[in-house]
Structures are given as C-alpha cells and as structure tokens.
Length: 418
Image 1 (cartoon, one colour):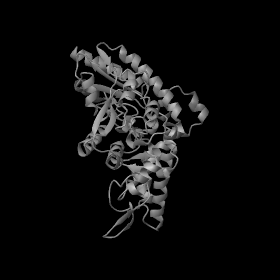
Image 2 (tube, rainbow, N blue to C red):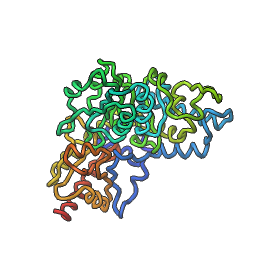
Image 3 (spheres, rainbow, N blue to C red):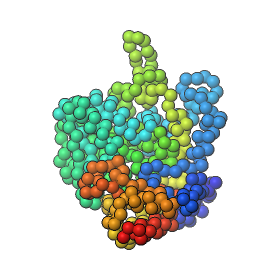
Image 4 (tube, rainbow, N blue to C red):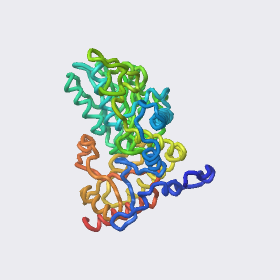
C-alpha cells in the first residue's frame, strides 16, 4: 500500500493526496457519472483500507465478547480492545489509559460529563459557561442540566470573524461558574479556539474545562497534559474511524469522583439486591457490551494518522485552506463565513444569488459532496443573520484539483441562478 513508502520519498511529495488517496476505496467511485469529490469531512471522514481490513479481520478471526471469557477468542478480543485504549491515550498524551472511556462519540461524551460530573457538582444559581459557536451537542446537554438543577447557562461572545472575545470571557468567570465547555475547533466556521488561554483563565479560579474535540482530532495535534484540560471528547468517525465510536478523556481524579452514567454489566464490582459497588474507572462508565470492533478500528485509524505524521497532515491542510480561500474569494457573489486568523480546513460560504440547498444539489450533480444547512449550529447562523451556509471541509486525501472542481461547480450554479 502507499503508506509503506519510505519516509524520505514521502517528504518529497508536495501533494499528500497522491500518497494516501488509494487507501480510500470510496474515492475511486463515481457520483452521477462524475468522479467523486468528497468535501464533507466535517460531517464524517472516509475510511482507509487499514481501518476496513481491521473491522473485517476482527469479525472473521477474533469475534468474541471482551473482559468476560477465559477462552482464546475472548482473550484476543480483549487484548485488541485494550490496545485500542492505549493507542487513544498515546495519541492525545493522556497520563494513563485508565483516563480513556469508550463512548459513542462526542455527543455521548458531553452528555456523560453533564449527567455525572454536572449533576454531582452543579446546583441552583450556579453557572455553566459555553461559547457562541458551539455545536448543539455542547449546548443541549448543558441546557437540560441547567433546567433540572436550576443553574444558568451563559455564553462567551464572538466577533464577526468568528473569534471568541477573550476579555469578555474572563469577565464572565466568577465564583458561580462551575464548568467551562468549549469547542476546540468550530465545525461551521473552522475557528481554532485559543483553548490553552481559556483553560488557564478557568483554572486560575479552580474551574474545570471540557473541550469538544470532534473537529480537532484529524487536524490538530492534541496534548491533553500540555493543555491541562479536565475533559476532552473524541469522535471516531471524524478521524477516519467508524461511526458510533469515540472516547472521553477525563483526569483520573474526576473519573474516580463521578457517579456512573449507565448501570448494568461490566461496570460493577459486586451486586446484591441490597447494594451494588462499582468497578474502577474506566470500567465504571462502560456498562454492557461495548462497540468492540469500533474501538479496535478507532485504534487502527489513529495509528494510520500517526504513521503518516500529524504535522505532515497539518501542513498539507494548511496549504489546501490557503488555496481554497484564494480560489473561493474569486467567485462572484461569494462570501466566506468564518475568517478567524487561525482556522482548520473548513470553508463555509454563501452566494448572494442562490440558497445553500440549491448549491448543494447542483454540486451533487457534478459529483461534488458538500454540506448545506445550519450544521447543528443554529445560534451561529442567527449571529450572522443566516439560515444556512454551504460548507466545504477538507481532509488529508483532498487535492487542489478537488477545490478547482468545486469552483467549476459554483460557476455552474452561477449560470443557472445568476
């Protein structure tokens, strides 16, 4: 496969997509008679052969439940499952694999923290602080918690470029603030938030911080110890792993003090009809049979990224973002939404002569997959006075030719509507 190419030859490649594209079978396909251009990576990424083969091999050769059997298949499955936990811990530089809880994705990770840490530590008249650019999955769980316990949800404002106003953030921190929950990278704007500064300011007051890492894992180098973040959520399908798998990182002391999220098998130490005692973390938060193949495939996906090199990927995506920004800025009537000084490879825009859903439909006819709508960030759309945007989101297998195809598609939109 391409990935076994020697490192020196890889470094000579200007276009990373030349190296990795053949690893993604779906990209060889056609859509409506046109070669697929996949620009919807912020919604979900495509899966490399290394991940697909891992899933197939697990079910063909190792399928068994984990942690419960003495037979060979169970032990093999358990070893692979726990190795995946170690890979996740290594990827984000957790101090221990016991700080990694497997969940369905970032949504479940946020809900877990809100329902356990939140209910145990947040009460009436307390405050939860989020930002103006949050995905619904980092708004709704906190709203639900606040409604239940009588707390107040407060919002860090942003400017027209899609950047947080840090001075106003600091002024919002007070003795009633019990947690700050913030997106690391905005899915609708591409903004890379100054999370280190956010965490430091919160910790000066003893306030824990949760980061929604859904969009960061495939684009940013994440080091949870360096950030000193309390909670970090991971969504596997945004980083070349299957859907329905992710992880929650939490500092050991938080996991030890948080009550369980779900009750059932695996998360117990002992059960009688009078009393149940719980297992140590992370088992305490992983009731029932987990997504075994998904966790193992998540480990394979992260290993795939590590072999290519996080910085190599980031370098290529920065070049794609630069090129894409330049090319889209030349399209008549196009306005980019989200122009922060530090961005990930997300290009959201409007055309003054066509609705985003019409744009997406016409582009689909040209074999180009983009996302249209509010991107589960309706407050962001309201801030900019919009109902929807068109979003082109890039990944390591995209090329400049993909962006050229997008611009050509937008010219066809102009022919039809303008």
